[in-house]
Each structure stands twice: as structure tokens, then as C-alpha cells.
Image 1 (cartoon, rainbow, N blue to C red):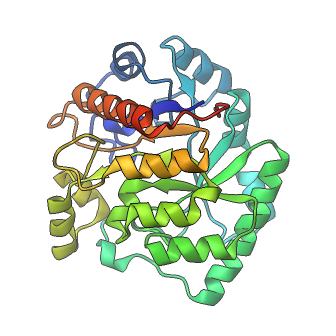
Image 2 (tube, rainbow, N blue to C red):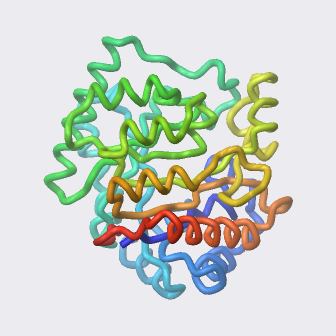
Image 3 (cartoon, rainbow, N blue to C red):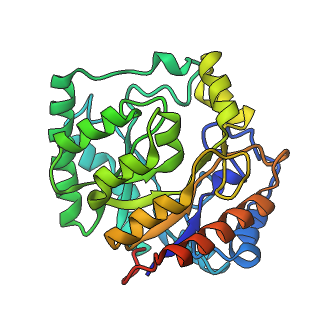
Length: 303
């Protein structure tokens, strides 16, 4: 079964908490659950840390807890140290019946800083091999806990470009899966359909993020920071006429591969300029229409 979810960053940003700070938490959940009709929602800084309090809060609005971002530091610490560091996050996932952990290496990431995107940290081939080995070991341990590691390629991090996605997949084994993010793939210089087609067999989570091509070009030309690009409106939802990503062929690739899991609209915008209720509704309607058109139904849901 395919399930459709959202992320609270459409209402209240995690990297710049001044964005959407005036929006009540109750409004976020009411709009996402009762008004728009999402099946679930990912983690956000507003949610309670206690696993049961989290479950109860989301359930009161008809929402499941999908999963949440975990910042790993495998470039700078051991796998054993990473395992110890993830315990609280893992407990929230397991209590809520989640199947995936969204992981991104952030020990040297710049997406939350005032550094321009051109200053993001690259890895040498040897460093990629070593990182991949540690990530695979961490993922194998998580698999033993019933959790699939899905790696989130992301602007301003060590895995941004299509070549880096390819290199990471080559440097890791069967326990590391991919969170494919259409928007970050496009912003990172890739053809989302081509990249997804290459790696769809290892995709276990999907972010339906769209990109405004004109803003992306401006961000590149001016060498903006990631957050400045966000503030300028680089991201949007499926179905937005300003968006540069065509989601129909992407969902067709997922359908052909028998993808079974969550499709999440994770698209941060300025809520005072682009109403989350309207944009998220547009995104969900678009995805459901395209899923029906492409035959993307799945067989057994993931949570």
C-alpha cells in the first residue's frame, strides 16, 4: 500500500525556527490530518520527545508518525558511538511502529550555516569508501533492530550530486537504502528520472519535493546559502506550475519497480507567502492523481 505523508517544515522550519514560529502546533496538525487528509507526518521540532506522547498527539489528528531525520557523524566517530547516540531517536521510531530511519551525515554539513552552497564539503574516493563501510555497518545494526536505514542525499552535505549518490550506493552494501528526494536531486544537478531509475531497487522512502527552476538558477548564480535559497522560494510542491520537476515519470518508475511505502511532500516554503494548507492540498491531490494514472498502488504499507 502506498501511503501519503507530509513534513511540518511546510508550516514551521527546523533549520530556521523563525520561519513559521507564529503558527500554532494545533493548526499544523489539524490542517495536515483533518483538512488535507494526509496519512502521516514526519518529525519536527514541535513534536514531543516522549514516544507515547508523540503517538497520542499525532493519532488525535488521524496521523501516523512516519519517521524523522537523524544527523549521523560517522566521519568523526565510530559505529559504536553512533549506535549509542541514536538510542533515543530509535526508541521513538520503534514505539511508533516506524520501519525506516532517515539518516544524513552532518558532521561537516553547511546547509544550516551561513556558508554558500559552493563551500560544501566533498569526499575523496578513499574517504567515500571508508564512510560507506561505516554506514553499512551502522545500517546492518539497525536492520537487526527492525529498522531500515534510508540515506537522505541533501544540498550542502557530502552526498549532493548524482555522482555522489552513485558513489555512495557503490560504497555501501545491501543494508543501506536510499531516501530519494526529487527536489534535492534536481537542485544537486541531476536528472531525477535517470537517478531514480538507476537506484530504484534500493529506494525505501520517497520525498516529493519540487524546485522552482528560476530561483534555483538565481541561487547558483549568486552562490546563496541553502537557507537563503529556501527563503527565496527554491522549493515547492508537486503540481505547482512554477516547479521544474515532472512527477509523473518518477511515479511511473516507482510503480514499475513495485515500490511499497511512503511518499512524503517535504517542501519547505515561507508560510506567510505560500499558504501551507493550499500548497500541501495541491501537492497531495497531484500525487494521488498521478499515482492512479501510473498504477502506483504498492502491496503492503510501511510506517
